[in-house]
Length: 208
Ligand SMILES: N[C@@H](CCC(=O)N[C@@H](CS)C(=O)NCC(=O)O)C(=O)O
Image 1 (cartoon, rainbow, N blue to C red):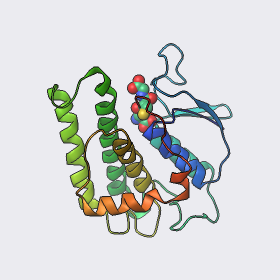
Image 2: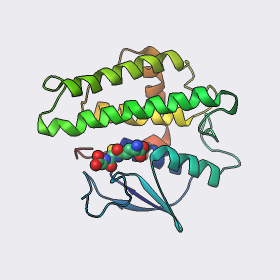
Image 3: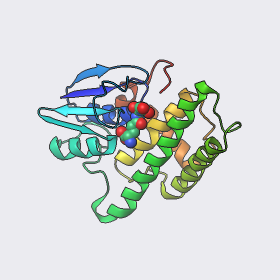
């Protein structure tokens, strides 16, 4: 397998964390910052992109779903164990809605960051103010969905990982304050210590 990514990308980090949790080896194609539009690894001109043999996939949640289905582990090593699914079978639509909300929130966090160097901020742009409001609104709603034991109690879930990666990026890049939500903060602090998180620092100060 080969993963195209940048060290800063929170979407790529989610995939890297899952690869680490599944103990899967992979080659890397790392380019920090934005890749040239002339030679992207996929048509969305975004990372991550995963190559597995003849198959090439993009969109981080799709890649994670592919990994979980293609490389299930009999006995996950971590505690709590990595969930073997994207969403709990008995709460499929609720969990998929949580994942979709996190993805939307992550996109707004990254957009806020990517516009910073051009001086386009929530103070100077009504649309960036809307992106910031969207992040707050998503996080407020996620706080109502998460438990004291994460999004899926008893598991280190893809929802937990998908939440942690963009919020850690938000912290590291000083995008906007997000704290003040008790359960999300507790989840964030628990995730930080997980070996797969420690093994995938976002590093650098590149734009994304
Ligand atoms: N929905 C995509 C988002 C991927 C994404 O936006 N990646 C950023 C890096 S964090 C990127 O490559 N952006 C390139 C661009 O904006 O042109 C996913 O989940 O994989």
